[in-house]
Length: 81
Image (cartoon, rainbow, N blue to C red; front, side, top):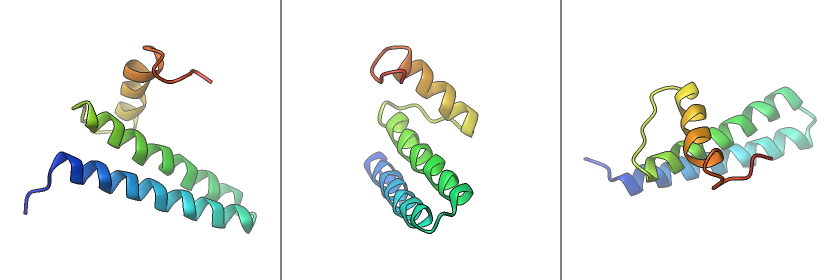
């Protein structure tokens, strides 16, 4: 079965939300290294879905970071802070 772009974006949003829930559980238990890891992936999944929404499909983590910087931070769609 072929999935649509919207399906993939929704999948990434769901993964992001799941990672955030995990991060909150880990923070509550003071598992800071694992918490930070889950927060990283919370952002990673959300940004990968955001980039796909504008038809950008980076293949690596570095590619996701670079494209987010180029298309959202440098264009001031997202505040640098």
